[in-house]
Image 1 (cartoon, rainbow, N blue to C red):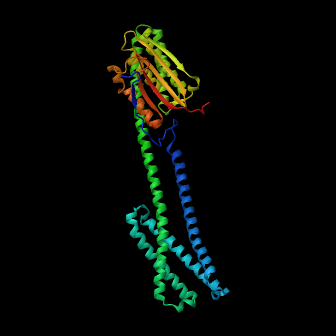
Image 2: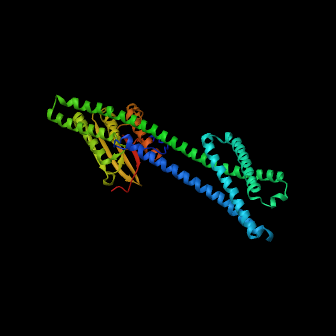
Image 3: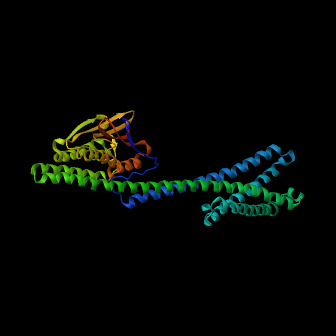
Length: 400
């Protein structure tokens, strides 16, 4: 084994974890903003639809008049004829806009927006052919029956009708493709959001389950320390009860939040070590090395306490002469390093077993859920004759 052996807990990436707050909020206080946001989103979609409809058909009108002015001869640029053709074309465009708007209602009712592209392709072609047929029939009926354009009588109606119908199909297929492309993207985005929300809910449940394991495990060890003192020293037992009450209060309060300040975590660790020193007496010595800038940093609750408890259990309780537990919190390269060292060997059975026990495995899973690959937990065989548990967390320099 090398001088610096490592037992690392992998921390895969996790995106989008939703951290619950500590304040209990009534369901009606939550639902109203959600409903309001959904209504705003729906109104925004309606405005986008109106904007796209107006812009698309308006662009068609603009292109028509541009090419008409560019390529029409002098005979067709007389005032009356030009005005009549413009009015006729505008009416036909309004017919197309009305048809597509009405088709949108039917497609929504038939559930086409929830279909995949394989089911949509034949429906889009059939819808485009049907709408184009209605559009061309209405347009020719308006041109023949209402306006009675003189130029149209010079041509055979059949070929013109068929060619116009095909042009209408091409135009409406483009309209339908754009319409359904937007809704497919919107559906994919909503599915991704739902998937992330589901993952977040699952991870939140896992995190709460892990937290629920910490408190009974910790309480059991604390009560063992207190039991050894009751018959020997009643005043110290009363002090120990006060310390234990502080720890329990902290564990209950911190169970509602995802992170606490390192300062608060250090206080509960100190209370725990006082209880353990009652049991181990001179066999347990503690060295503190905590940087001032690290005290306000957020850390998962009971994380440092878990590392210290592991150090006492496997580095002090199993040794006749006890030893020194060193607790360090330093900031280097924008990373908060928490280190807890205790006497022992990493390869020894007891220490090897600790790496797969509840405490460190729990701590590793909580780091995985909260930080993804930005946090690590490692067991190091350093300094010589000691085992060090090191946690690296992102440092938040904006905290005051």
